[in-house]
Length: 332
Image 1 (cartoon, rainbow, N blue to C red):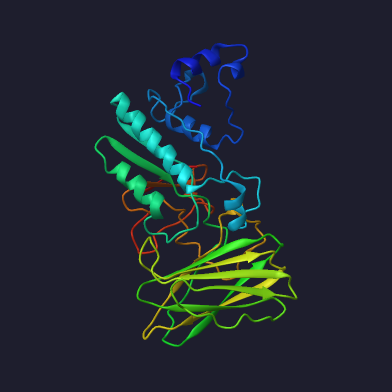
Image 2 (image 1 turned 45 degrees about the horizontal axis):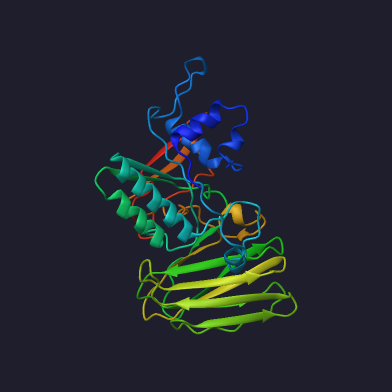
């Protein structure tokens, strides 16, 4: 359903606006961001958006289907969006700007910890294409993952060496864990449950898939390998935990490379996972939500404007490959 500027203004002036515009924002996040970016000047309240004369074209994105949320074990009332639907929304905005022969500033307030944290994947590259167009720019939010203990970076591992990464699970809430290394490094993993159950060492092979049943915990872990991830060509290992028991889960990572190696791991963002599940030895850096780590997008974090200090929750750079991000920090 599409509503024109005239229809929206008519609804705002009406005693029963929902009869004219039958769409409501129950979340409020996008509306708040739009108000900060281009809210109308209200002198008596000492308020103005950054660009109050801007023409707004807003898209209410369709929420993801239950099947996609179940695959990633996302069980939450928070809104979840599929990358395909977001791509359709961005293309709609691009076409509308072209039809009106107007410049486009695409304000993107979504993000995820899934992905290689370099280009933002397919979505990041699509946004980059828009941003590279004359008369267009894309501004992305960096997220609120700085103090969530959802990122782990290893030390350098010598050839044949291994390390145990400990994750505290405080509930039966399932989650997806992702590991990325740098090509041509090859890593393999095994999993140890809180009761001491051992998966055995899995095989680092492209396309390798393995289901591990931990009977005492009543937990299933699905492990998938990709030695050449789409985003960066690096190795990518995904581990999906179904009804994990409470306690300390250990991920043992083996360096199969004839040389040194290191890796990064990410748990889901705070919106998708209870705060009781986290890395015991977490790293607050490299926590920018994808696609804000794409070098060609404008990435905005925030600082504590009340005392002019670092906001501990604000996601931190750099990108995984060392690109300097974010571009600047706004008051928050």
